[in-house]
Length: 614
Image (cartoon, rainbow, N blue to C red; front, side, top):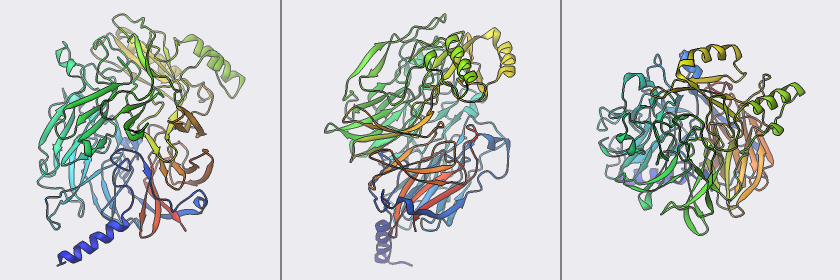
């Protein structure tokens, strides 16, 4: 048996080598910034594969694999890398070799349907009250696509028997209205731990009905799994004849433990594209909200889109930064707008104006009269006119011009219509769940951005079947999506604005890595990524920005000052994920999960790849 002194020396050695990424977003504030600088602009070309691990997560082959997305970012805690697979297997790896130390399989039922098949990561917590040799002193928390919150022993991977029911809490309690919604209520992002409270939101399928499950955020005792508090983003919905659901927080939270604050990004109230059953601004949907982490008490909120009709969730993790000498929260949005808020009050630290927004011509719909817009430039283009129509051939360009002319198109925040309306950017963003990285040296907020237009159309209930039959005959190259929006007079169809040749109708690039200079209030540079992106960037003190996220299977490194591409490596599959970095025994590693994205039809796989200087 080890003596206490021997254990302390071993722990000290691990902590000395354990420099890097202990939280999903790099740190509690989600900055995705590393102070490691062994890898620099001068030597990044020397990066080589150090090890590759195959998780086997897509075995056995099932139809559900077609929706799987390997979106995880590993974390490094007490000498082990921890990550989750699309089906919620949790794996612990040796950071030097990638050798598997343990694996836990929650046995998600793969014969059921799920809105999403993805897990972005796990959270770690060490119990300061527990003796060093006690099981589950180090706990790994994971939320699952079948709506469980699970606690595992960080050393063995075994469920913590004292947490919930044998190591798990059933998150569907108190939120699911009926069995038809079971596969629509999930957790896809890593929990957040502040003090001894583990906090989670939920992922809820869009557009099915008015009465979707409740999008509550909840805090649980990290030792016992006992519910400590619940916060409802739309308490006003309880007073309606039919309770509106969702407004859920499906992305990652940020935290300021010193202030006992957690910052929650929320989505739209249900359904997304018709708001006649949810009049008003719908606060605190489509917002960033600060809560007391220990109690769930509301502190402040800031709404980025009033009465959302476009699926403009706040998909990104808020980023805690310093701005103009004040602690601040940076908020990137699907809309492409960037807001910087006072961390204590939620008030903007730059000019934000309420500007008039287009009205709706749909009976029963009352679109917001105005929307909040920052005075500085957006991170992506926000208007597409017939004159902007693009195509690689004259035929494609003419098709796109005619299509744009046929649709309602009043610029940003054009409401849905019966003939079809344009949203630019579309519902994928702007900035999606990949969120932003903060470079404190340069004052740059770095984000992967998308710029593809979407078409969304409301369909009278009695016309849904004929519209569905017609769509099967005229389906575009990127496909489309119908939703019934039960409880409203209208169903919905949305698709991407792409020509018959499969290319978007707006000019490229359709994805880019963007650096926004907060001091200047404008974009400093953009690096085209050509395709849409899902995943985020990472910045390092070596003057580098790493990102994958595009449909092609490459990890790239850019010069943080200029956006110049300095290095690229082909991966076994595309990487719709965010890289991380750590230093282990004198070597800095860059790690990326490369497993593709079923819905994006990118190259699939199950690889975790580490790079180092060799």
